[in-house]
Length: 198
Image 1: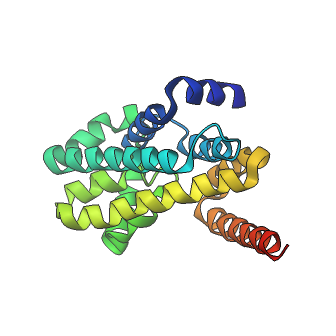
Image 2: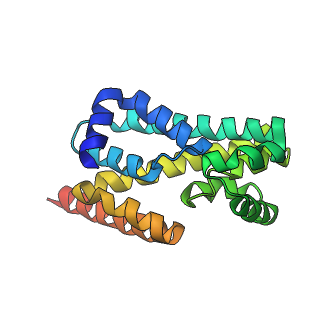
Image 3: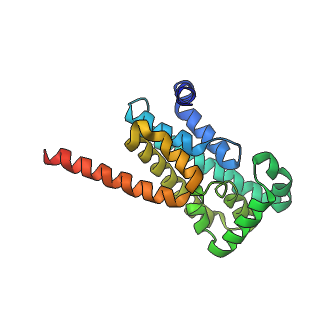
């Protein structure tokens, strides 16, 4: 897998990250966490530069979630139910996300990126619910930035162990991510403190 990701980043670079994340958030079967974590690892090796990587990731995720919102707003639930199976969005996931959205509303847009399956549906549901674009953008784009920073940071910090993040997130979801991000941040701060004290 590492070889394929290396080839992808070498060939398509920041533009590839943008389109992969945009299409992945819309619902195509693209391993977003894997790509983002590996991109963070590529930053640690000097293959990519963090500001450009973060910008392309943020813009890609924002573009994808905006397209999903626009589709939900314009064509609604019937289209999502009809097209959903082609995007790996099942009726069960739609129903579950609708219940979560009714309860947590826009906050689901913020944390939904970290919940596999939910980030692909939450923006559609926001559009179907006719949430105002200003309110949608405030939460969705903040979530895109937080998600991008988190995975890039974890990949850069863990370096050759980058793949473990993606594997555990797939299995344990948001809880693992919070623990891992906290530990990685603590380790990073300790390393920086030791370097500065020397």
